[in-house]
Image (tube, rainbow, N blue to C red; front, side, top):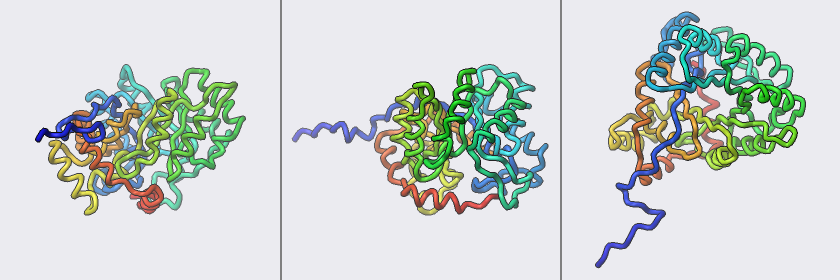
Length: 332
């Protein structure tokens, strides 16, 4: 009896999935300040975490990333001194071909403490934008390529304030790509609302940075729409704040064998899953050590079969559960 042909929905296990077209960038959320919610920071960072120690660590990672082909670097006003560290590195190295993105909308309030009562305060008002743009410009000058509203949710005034939209459009007219990052279980709603914002008939937001990983893929369809509309799509938290780099008892039975079969590590598998999304342009590594960054960059060599991608898709959690878990992660 002849073997039945494979249907398009069930390709042979040996058939590779399309190779990724996205590139890896480096985000400074974990190294621009002493405290963050990523797992394992007690092992990853210098014990004193002084400004000078964190500056040295940041510059070490920027050097390593750039030497290995990374050209996209992402900071934020609320990432402690991330813009300062990045600006100093740019001044010292003058590296050609880099794309610098940053974000406004959160003010850093931890005072360089890990145990601060409040690490950041969110405010998407026009006044905050004007203040923080001036602060960003004072550090990064005309090297700012992308400026995004930080952590937009569907109820953010950044989606409805016409005066703010005018100010952002003026920045865009001066050559800066204006965008937004998203967070929370309703990321897709925020992305679609942003795509509908126009100024003088032209779309305002041309860059979107969202959380996407095998545990929380719910923004994928909206990100595909953003990409189709011409937006630059960036993926953040591809390792779920470390949950996918050091998988727990639920995730390890899937990620461990898959990483072994691919000859790589769980973090590279998770990052590669994001790189394989056809709508992704940049996938950020949030590494805090040279070893982590080197391991993360191995994701560029990972090529999945459709079956392996389907296996990863089975890890998805309900968005509400994922974001509830994230909200419970301690600053450390």
